[in-house]
Image (cartoon, rainbow, N blue to C red; front, side, top):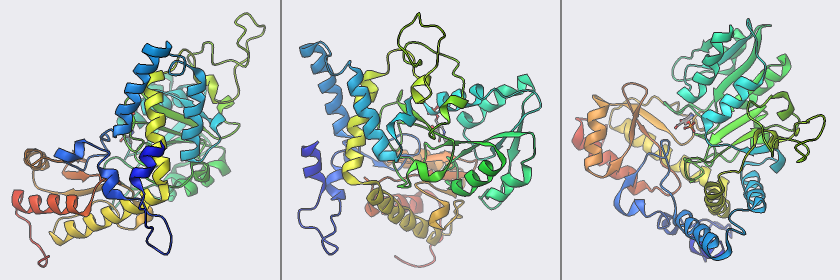
Length: 401
Ligand SMILES: Cc1ncc(COP(=O)(O)O)c(C=O)c1O
């Protein structure tokens, strides 16, 4: 890790002695960026060199030391501690899971919801945040959709729909479509007052926003690793606030789920911390790689990353508006994060034409182009995108740059 850290910090700190990451050097840690203007981190992150190095070292350990480290639970705990440091929670509150969908399923199916109970979800949810809850409809659970206006769904919209049947709220920290950042602390307070469980899909925020998960106040936060955490698919985490894991009954259990590893023990007693959701051998390779990526993120610092993403997306916001295009993402920073969505005519065709120019963006939310930079992007990337947009679609600039 020392080597990576050496590569990413300015030797001569500007800003009155404050160390700033050398983002140009960081960019070089992502070979994808040699050939692409990659602005689609909301879909998946290009993996850094340290991920490749980790895969190689995993194999070397397998071949040369029969997996002494790579196939060891100590390494899993080491990764858990690293991740816990990054997301700002005690490590005993984190379970490794394979994706966001699995995490939301664990919660939705583990809360013991019954016919007549109600769950609120926002209309901005990804299918991972809709379908696990909607599956409960077959048991008579009512899933009600909370709708917003002008690209926002404030806590009040949820509160209006809360009644004495409401048991849970499922919501994203940052919406995958228009990039709206929900006010999770306010929603947490409202849920806590009424004894309602708040489960947050954090995948579009984790690794981008610096707020420690504990400060959000939610009961549960889940996230897959393949976006802001720069990790392979098949990695992810489920965070349950301290004391909350025991409220969830796991559907699957095995050797790691119990307080004791004596398989004949009477009576069987589930672990009360997040290990109750882990059962067989974990994704050793994925978690090994994830730990290296998380160490890279830690070496930069989430505050620096958030500042960088804020700068890039604000610049993008201004450029896109100057083109006369309508941005669907709310403007204030506290209402957005790493995603900007704006309307273009025939977005799929625009996306394809940009792809031909080696610029990667996405189409979401019907008519919108979704652009999602990360710390490894530059203002130059934004300029290249905007210049290409001006060629691909007829746009009216309000003035010359
Ligand atoms: C908000 C949100 N939730 C979940 C997912 C993905 O779910 P999973 O990790 O289960 O593939 C995505 C994107 O892929 C997303 O944007």
